[in-house]
Length: 422
Image (cartoon, rainbow, N blue to C red):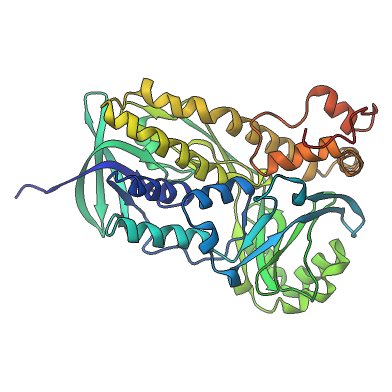
């Protein structure tokens, strides 16, 4: 008996930050899509989520920003960068950004993603398949015309006018397209926890030392996210040392955690976040393209990995109607997406790598230079705004020129140090 063929306009592999946003935007435009998600259900695990201003813009465009449950969202404006031990180096205030997105939104785990998935199910009932995976691509010559897949272990054929790989750093779609990826695993990863916060904990802290990073971010419900840099792959070794050892380490880095660490009573309150970077020479092929981590995973220092996947989805969703109308999904046509997005993505990847070299360093000379730059930023409104607007996803160009770097290091005065909005 011949296998039935499922037909759709756009087949999307992966229902993460990019794939789910793209599917919802297409549904809002009346364009058919089918999303394949390997997981058996929406995500439930612990993850720290900070929605930067550009991510808030995407949610607002989807009509979801104001629908996020108030009990699960916290606006944070001030981020304090400190040395290990607690000495403040620099304070960045999101209130300096243009309204209405002049804040960071810290959400409880998966809140924004679940809102997107729920809206997608309402707009496109049955258009999201869980426990489903791409096993290969269907082709007509060199052009991709659909997917070979499994759904709950059963094979299925999908015909589509466009295939989108939104399936993460280890993308199956990318492999099937023959796109070579430079996948770099960073030597450091993060232990995450969410704990009860002391009264009045309203400002984020980010502490840097010699081979030490500890971030604390206020979350809804009088809670706090803790991000602690650990050696990649060492989560089990850290657990083997015991909770007391971890509590002592946190208090040593940030004495202010003395009031927080008693709330860490079980390893189930923690999670592990590996870090990696993906670079590819192309994101498009005839009939297919890559978005998000499949095309350009980046270090979390950029604070933009998930946000950039969401922005990818918006750009692609705005281009798809014309591609379909003209019946042209050639690589040449699809490259408009890559041309539009590569500059910002490349800049952010490079910036994140530079931050890794200085923020994660075990070299005391580099650490001294890093701290010197932070202190300069605290006095220099122009450079501080450039860093903030980059982190917020509002810039496509690097925040510093070569001369800016020299001034940031404190080797030259900046005659425009008090200028804002630069």
